[in-house]
Image (cartoon, rainbow, N blue to C red; front, side, top):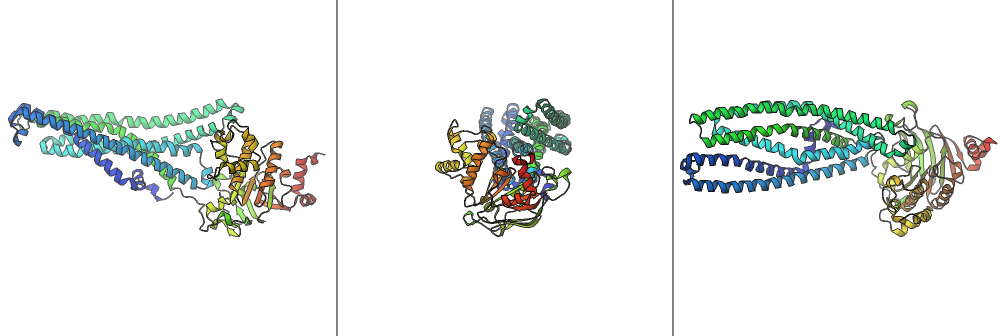
Length: 605
């Protein structure tokens, strides 16, 4: 985080939204003008009372209109004009504020999402999906609601205070102080409530993020919940989180709801003073009836809107708590920074080297990535290997040995702490990160398909591909035949995460996606570990075709899939302990040979 997080949330929002300043000024002017015309009818009512009581000696009589009937006609026409103008500006401010809210909401969500995509994998893996969704949706929507209504309410309230205060001191300075007497108490109470509400609504936003996170997690894992008959357990977890959210909200509501009743009792003092002491001035002949009528109406217009400050304050505090969470996300800066050197894909030959690299996952991710009990230990230790351009290299080893971590380091999801990784002799931290990742095609064990058609998923990342190119890629991946058997062929909707397809079908679509990308470096990370034997054979056939002419790194448990590799590296505890061809490694009779015997059943004979 940077120092901006120490600022007031409203000031941080103003700094963020400088480009909207002119629109905000126009909306503010419209709100002020609407309130000015809204305050005119009580004045006109007072003037009409003055006409009826004083007739030709009324206020309008001083302007040469002595006929009371003409005076009433003038007031009637003015009333129509005032109401029409007030309605016009109400429409204008409503359109301006709501469009401003929509624009800020759109840009904030877009900026937050774009920023999220730039964040390191270390940050993303440390966050819950539901928590991030709460920021991108709930928090931004909360800010929109405040800009829709709350900002206008505050501006119009301040306008009323200034205009009516001036009017009081002009018409009846001797009693004006009585009307404004409650206002310091109202403002002090508002500040006091704001300070006490702020931490409570921050807690509310945190609670809803936790609840959303668990809900998103459970919906994604519904098959697991059902297969382990854990519905009752998950119901209890959601109930507990929902109860925490309810209690947190209840505490905030209890405090915010006390605001209006307390303020009403303070406000009635000013209303009482004007009604009684202003009336006494009328009886004493020191104030005319029309002016007294205006004062009574204006007191109501001045003080009564203050009772709505509770709702406005509640809306404001919710919005500021949400604003802090949104801007805090925008303030987080990535550690993985794109390098300055360009490397067009067409220039990449595919020579990859790992030179004495060391790597340890960040503290908060060590448990998830194989480090027992969160203890700091290196995942990769002083590892060196070179993959010549166009060669196929296999990396094998037990779970947790660091195989997949090498892929993450090559793609710069993380950066090594020591040593260097090079592509065509250039250190990858010096390369433009987009160029680097465009040069590498990844087919992972955990295939992710987006909700959409088969065609869209194959063309993902190569968005301008023609249907013929998509079909050709599917044929290379041996996916074309099963795609044609789907209800709508290439236009079949695969469902969220491709749930309408089998694991083997998803995997082959993933391979077709990589084929269409046509990268100079291809990484197959456990690409056949979760498929049946028939599908594995089909994938193997497709792999034999797609590795031709490109550098290929195969991460595998099944040694049968890598026996034809140009070089096989065996990893253990983050180090390369054996390397060579398949037959050579069997002759060595080391770890590789032991794994081979276990997988082929020879160890049982």
